[in-house]
Image 1 (cartoon, rainbow over the protein chains, first blue to last red):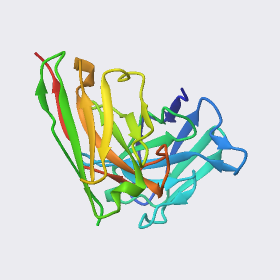
Image 2: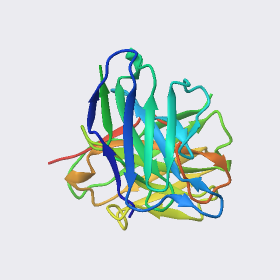
Image 3: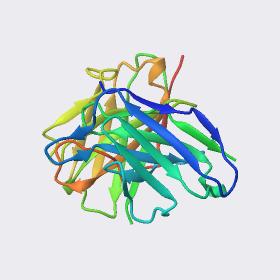
Image 4: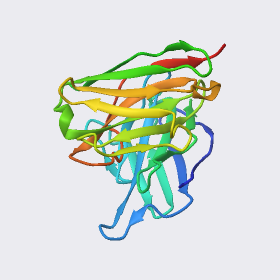
Length: 112
Length: 123
């Protein structure tokens, strides 16, 4: 199984500042035949289901604000929130879909 | 509007069974692979099982293989998870989730999630 490890576990960020969340996979999730990274990011607010933010490591889901961006390739990925808003307080998860079982990171809690 | 509505959760004793359902609307259910993902109280997300568009291919986490069975009824736009031999560690909110791409055998990532149904395994 591919193990996904996020860092940090929690993050305190001031309003308007940048939040950076890292995700490392135990093996590459880059598929060489199509040069795509099989990695997604989700946001989960308390009492709500997860919400898809990013897929293919850097493609923003429709309707997601452009302050959310994804980057990275191979085994190392980053979710960046530029200009943190109060409504961004949540737990963020990365997920690989290169292999079955699909696996998630342990989550990173972003607080203000 | 895509809607996924889970039901069937509840309190069950260890060794018991529950059948979870997920009623889908707002999209052509038969065109999309579907999955169950669970979340233990205060914990992270764990993929449980997935099913292809036709139901002919199914996939399970090792933690539930042999105990859980995923199925779908495309005529009723409904996804199911039969859970047997339940253990305390199966206690979680169970979400159904939809794959965004038409016709996949094995869901990749999940663009829509239901609100979840809570399964509590306790004596």
